[in-house]
Length: 260
Image (cartoon, one colour):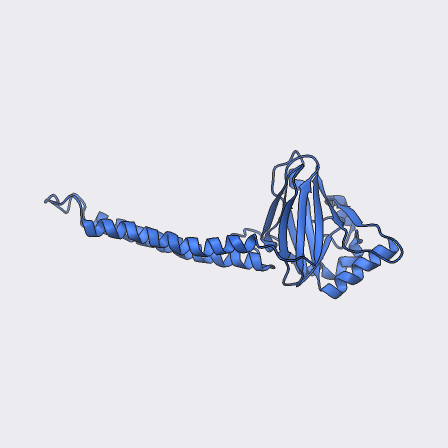
């Protein structure tokens, strides 16, 4: 399904990529990433509350119990009430974190019946893809293609290239609102197929087949990179996913099957 860059010129303004000095997550595009984003907000609230409480306690102790302001030594060694409090409160905090985290982990591992399977192979230093769920009337070959990073010279000559070190010659096209299955492996060394907007980060291990589920909720162009150090050109293995409505996706697939 190696479509040319001119085919996707219409979608070049829909890029979901990292921004300059970005500290937060990219906009979620899947239900999994939405759950990760909400859990992050919950975790940040708990952490900020703990920092404020501990900081306030330290300030009160330094102000009221400084050696220069107190001439009398405390005459107690322990307090049952305080020990109960500082044991029970952290336990309750951990429970408040455990419940949503376990729910999120189980939802990430949930296996649904996929309507489409995308096979991903990591190489040094590019990605190759295969879709074998479609057959045309004239032939029965699978859609196989390799995705390489565009060089600076190509970006200067092309009107499509937006992001340096993130653009590829062929983009992965996936349908929205469809249950997808990703089968990920490698042929040489360890890689990691990562797209932040999807909340997907799966290791590609030689001799092992890893699986991930994906359900894209909105269309657009999503960028990712290999997240496992895999050699000298590790930083030059970009991933570009173009998510389109299902009708357009099937039209593109069948067109490439018939005419390629």
